Every structure is written in structure tokens, then in C-alpha cells.
Image (cartoon, rainbow, N blue to C red; front, side, top):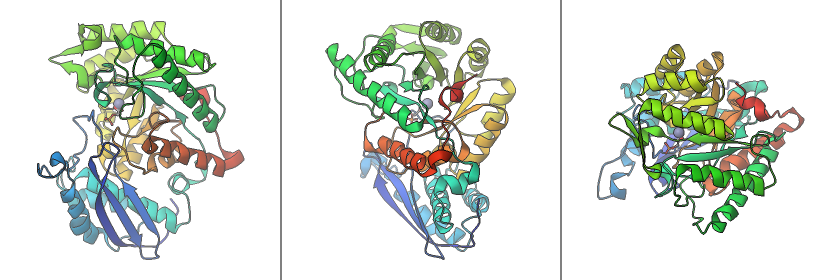
Length: 429
Ligand code: PGA
Ligand code: ZN
């Protein structure tokens, strides 16, 4: 990181709304040289149980208990005085101060939402002070790899009512040679999917991440609709683009069994792995995220030994961007990829440490949004800064999703001839 000596002068936190109409926190941070940074924090629905704590007011008289006034006052009254005067470009020190001020293992005292908003606003203000775009400030001169979008075009699970058990069906346009072309391909497939769903007489309303959320007869039907959409858009599945899944299996795991209600199946961990193995041999699936429950470590090890040479097995709820959990995954060979969500861990520095460790051991890293989002586009810059080569930020629909894609278009344009795009390299085993 380029260093400037500007110090943290003022912090103003406020309660705003996320894309589901739930309160979240936004922080405006000002430095001694007048540079400012603004950051807003997203929120999950299929939240992993090992995530850092999102502090909510639990006051049933406001927003059904979901208000964040406590997190806002923690930022304004407790965090602001504790970090005032610190050099903003010393991100690791600022984050360490935040961690110590909270003092708990899961950031439950001040709230990971309050802490992350300040952590990110600090980085953005420091980037502005250095006159650098955030991706360059965080990633240095080598930051020039645009990510392949994993576009969630059909929503189920906790992101849509009565759709599929599997939470996310994504299309990954790997044959593209630039980010803008990948976005175009994915978006054309998204529009074709609308037609394919309509033809079947199903509804084309969208879920929390902008993907369609029809009431389907089975999980398999979602794959078949997407394959039809790819064809309709003039692309070849398995060549131009692939399918990625996020079952978010913790949300249908009960009493040691995986309950696929759309398929009328109750499966053991081994049977669930067999289900995925059949899908992987029948369909052009390139990755499965959270295929198993967040505590089913032995299942993950078995899943990875069976499918880990063919596809990416991505831990989201399994790792919650947490370095200790990642270390366990590495030593047990529990997966070969990790999903990264800033608010699962609560500071930028901890997030960067987890990314670095995963990259060190050759794992694939995917930078991700949450189902509840804001217009904040930090994750677009983060993906380029760390050179993840992959990003998950929903369908090309709903402004909180599209804002990230639009930011990536701007970064690609700014990089010009220096921009690189990994295409299918991003998912090569
Ligand atoms: P969430 O879902 O933001 O609702 O947790 C996203 C995901 O599971 O990847
Ligand atoms: Zn997930």
C-alpha cells in the first residue's frame, strides 16, 4: 500500500437500508488532509454459523428488531475516539485497534458491521488521499486481473420462496476474452432464461440476487432451463460457458440428513455426494459451493477426494473467510477453493490475510457479495486488487448487483491495454 501520513479525523456512521429493506450501517470517514471514504456493509440470509456477529438492536418496535442503532453508536461513540489520529494508510494497525477494542473472538461487542464499515471507509479514505483507485491502492501496480463473473441467474433456497432447494444456479462465461464480453454473454443468457421460463408458463419474478425464481418441479429443472437459455442465446454450454452451483447445503441439512424437498429426497452425506457426482457427469458444472453442511468436515473431505480433480469445491459457510477454519480445510484437504466475504470476518486486514493464505496454497479465491447488498462497490475493487480472477455478485439485474459490474467495466476501461482477463484459466484444476 502506498502510504500517506493523513490521519483519521472524523467518523460519521448512520443507519441506511440494504436491498431487502433491512437496516445496515454506512460510515463516512474524513482524514486530516480532507480526503474522505464512504463504506456500507452488506448482510446475508443464508448466514454461516461461524460468521462474525452482525449487531442488531433486537428492538421489536423498530424494523422488526433489525435496526442497527447500537452498531451506529458504537462506531460514532466508541470506535471514532479510539482511532482518531491514527494514520489511515496503516490499515493493519487500524484494524488491530478495532479488533482489540472489541475484544471478543466474534466481534460481538461492537458488531462486525460497525467494525467493517470503519475498516473499509479507512481504506477508501486512504486511497483517496493517495489519489489512487481502491484496487490500485490495495493491490499495487500488479493489480490488473479482471474477474470472470459467476452470475447467479436462477435463485432458490433462502433467496426466493418456493423455488429450488439449491440456492444458486450460476452461469460462468469462460470463453470471453475480456470482462466486458463476459458480462455481455452472461447478460444475454440471463435474458434468454427469462424467455425459456416464460415459454414453460412459469413466473419470471426475481429473487434476492436478481436471478429468476420460478416455482420448479425439481432442482434438475433449473439446470435444464439454464442449458436451454445458453443455447437460445447462441452459446455452447461446456465450451463457451459453464454452470456453477451454490446449494448452500447448511440450509437444508437437518439431523444429519440433506433434505431436498423439491426432489422428495432425504440423503446421507455420502448419498448427497453421489447426487453431485451424477450431476457433474451429466452437466457442464464447473464448481459447487457449500455442497455440504458447514460442520460436515468428513463429508467435505470425501467430496473433495471424489470430485476435487474435476471441479472447484468452494467453502463459504464452511470457512466464513476465517483464517483458522481455512487452515483446517487446507490440512484436511476439505476443498480446493474458498469464497471470500468481508463481513463474515469483519476487517479488511483479516480478509486479505485469508485470501493470501488461500492463494499461497494454490486454492481458487472468489470474492463475493451478500444477498442483502448496498450500492457500495468495494468488492469489485477487491477482486482486482487480489487478482482473484472470479467474482460472485449476482444476476445482471437490481442496481445493487449491477453497480459492482459497472464498477468493473470502469476499472477495465481505466486499465486499458494493461487489463488482463483469465477466461477459463480462472477455473482450471
Ligand atoms: P447469503 O448468500 O449472502 O444470503 O449468505 C450468499 C451465499 O451463500 O453465497
Ligand atoms: Zn454461498
